Structures are given as structure tokens and as C-alpha cells.
Image (cartoon, rainbow, N blue to C red; front, side):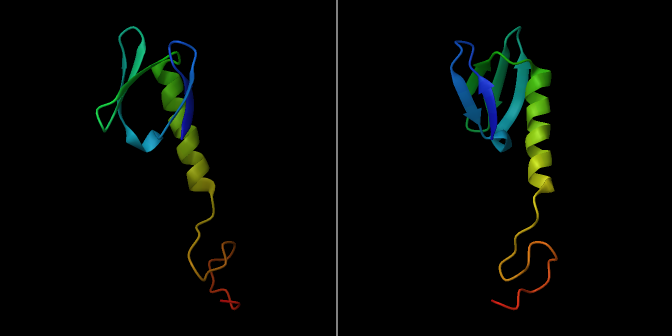
Length: 79
């Protein structure tokens, strides 16, 4: 999820995985995979940077697999 600001200054949180494309017309318009469109104050470059930040944060998290220690990835003897 990324935090943005609608053109009328109302905060908006979008699921970055559902962004289809971003247009600059001259306002920034974000088209979602479900057909919704949002006009935001942030530039297209800022939106892209926020998506990259979000994806990096997800990639940095340790993988959680049931029955495995998240630090080592080995089977947890307690399960």
C-alpha cells in the first residue's frame, strides 16, 4: 500500500499491486486494474518512487513459511 494525496488534499492509500498505469495530463492520473482512476497531487515520478519503496520493504521482510524459523529457514522443532 502506498500513501498519496488526492487533488483536493484528501489522503488516499492505494494498493500498489493494482496500479495499471500512471499518466501525466498535466495532473497525475493513476488507473487501476479494476477501471477506477485517481487524480493525485504527487508527480508520476513520486508515485513510481513510492511503489519502488513499497516493493523494497516487502522484499526485505523475511520469508514466513509455516513450521520454519523465519531467521534460518530451518524447520522449527517446536512445531
